[in-house]
Image (cartoon, rainbow, N blue to C red; front, side):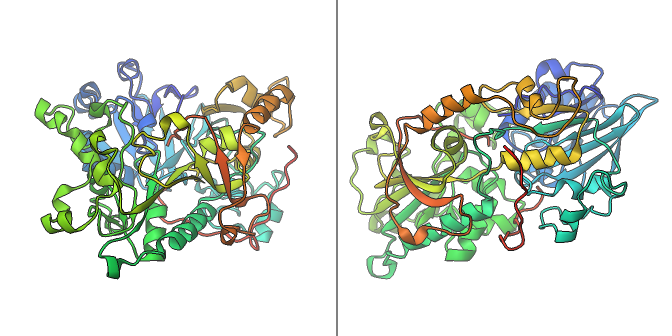
Length: 529
């Protein structure tokens, strides 16, 4: 979860990912930057006061984001009123921010690998250089190839490709061609900076497991004989965007689109390549990602397709966007097709309805693994607390699974990134639970606040707490030996976990499709933990 207050120490005239009232009324701010389209970085963005600020100070105050993020803003009525004042900046295209009449800052965007449109921001000025990662997930060895360091012979436009052996060998801070631009202040996403969790599966590994599991389960369908799918898969995600790679890979690998609710489908109106992998017809496919479960949240704050300045009737209809598109289901289909979970879950009166289909649920997240189970497995069978078995979240499913799927960098990836850049000061955008800024800095700086690189500190007490939590999880025999992947020895692909812990929700690049990695090309960096 983003905990950054928005203002940069060196350049308080620039505000990143914070649009709260106390920030908006700060007369010193000359530029607002939105790194990506996730709720925790957009608080108060829709507020009329922010719109008014931009409109009335059009020559002095600017609002910047990436082209894909602007498409989301234009598509969603909640934010579309800002589109005329939103300046889209392509990646690797430096632009000037006037922070006063006499001083400017040169800023550059670069894809951060977190979700579509997510960017890092590099700012250069008289007071020093600042790199703000936003939420990010980048492979090892990529920091030296950031486009901000084009003076470097190691810089590469293909940030997500795997470095060559010569690039790895040349990775040396003493090389004058390397990292020609220093980083004074580094603001970095530390969501999974947990010394006890060194590595997290790549998204490619996680999706490979997911697709293999789905194909095996739905292969038992006999749609032609029965007239409908008997085996259904329901995926539960923790954010609206960021799963495009999942949707596209499922579609290309199985030939089935993914059923989503109206809201998700509308979000991709200006992105046909993604929308082509989705459908609003619940009977067109056995694979679903359509059920909105977080009923505790205020719909007015959650809805994206109603203007914040609309009438009450418009806002009262907001929840329709979280439902299936009833118009896509013909009256004949209603009579001949069986009831399925996404047709029933909208009304709790249907909880006792018997089903002719067999449905399983797969929860995509990483925080549950890092906080509770550990990341020894990519996919585990999960037994919810008994008190929740008859709730809409679990009632209709014969089995529940959890897939470790992360938008955020692992400890190993964060350490490589920070050690490569060697900043003078380090600030955390997001922190693990029960971890403070001071604790993070102790891993990289000495007692005189000099950067010395990652080193172990005394965390015995913290480790004991983590171990106690993990001992509560019981690992049983994998349900399918076929799903064991030998690609990475540190990960078992599937296990079985019983847990009484509640569901942890994860927070939820301009690259919509991520390049695949192979262990033959990737050499693990040896870091002493």
